[in-house]
Length: 329
Image (cartoon, rainbow, N blue to C red; front, side, top):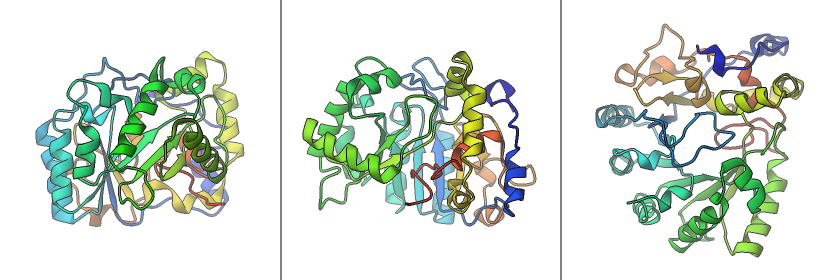
């Protein structure tokens, strides 16, 4: 594990916190393959736990993409969740999506919106519609200043235009089966607000200000790893933020954590319990298969999840997952 990318040792270790509440973190069945196809991105967001940017060269090959599809087909895993970087910049992205759709899998794409304006990507909304992709897009706030502060100058304006394009294609519209979900990450070193209340705010303001509609808003806690951890250290907030996560530990969140029904695959085909563990190179239990080639969901059911202090981010407050808050209020 790369120690420079993980937070300082927590005062209360995550495993000790679980034990104090009589809990143990184990998986259930594997319902989702979450695949990170590489770290190349057209943005370099301040909160990015992947440390993605236009300068990154890590890219999943067609061979590895085919291995993912082989596992998806053999084991009939219901959902393929594709992330990056900007996954659309991977040369095998459309092949992976279209083949997974043909296999009957539900395909989710973590789409940053502005990639639509990159060369050769202007037809992405139509491609998503053709493959019935669920589009999940980060939008830090419904105002320009806050969004650009986190994601870069000019990102908000492009994001709004991309959302309009998705709406025009049928995404996020009442009565449509084309799902468009947004993701809210706090701009600073604090926890997200209640998901239901900020979703209502976003729906009201996005429609009133920009004429944009969407299905749901997910709140996700910023994880103290990679680029966000660098920010915490530069601003002198690391210890305070980690303490805040620990103090906000919610035992009710444990049952709904995403690692309980998900396996994460990196650009080389290596396996992890979640995307966050992937970024600090904390692999699955060493006794389990380590790559997608040898993957067998029967062996991963009921496995013990590998944890570290960053896991407090997923259990703070209402909890946090790739599907938003874990504990519904």
